[in-house]
Length: 82
Image 1 (cartoon, rainbow, N blue to C red):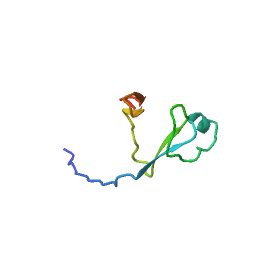
Image 2: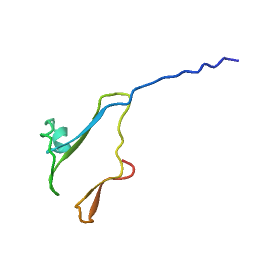
Image 3: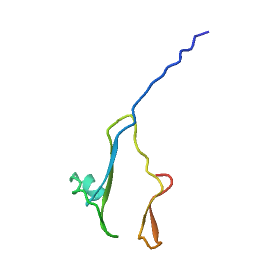
Image 4: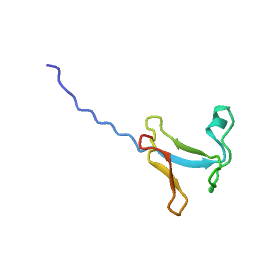
């Protein structure tokens, strides 16, 4: 019988950041850089959401993301499957 050996590995929590840019995924596909970061947008504005993690071992899955107008109207942006 082959003996078993218990292994323990620790890995730090990745540092991630989130930003919104006046840009679109189509711009990135065309090789254009993301536009400048913005703090506010209006309904209908084209914006690019970017999440960056400084670790290649982990990633981020965003799910159940929505926008609201503050008056009860809600629109899904990303569904429950991400």
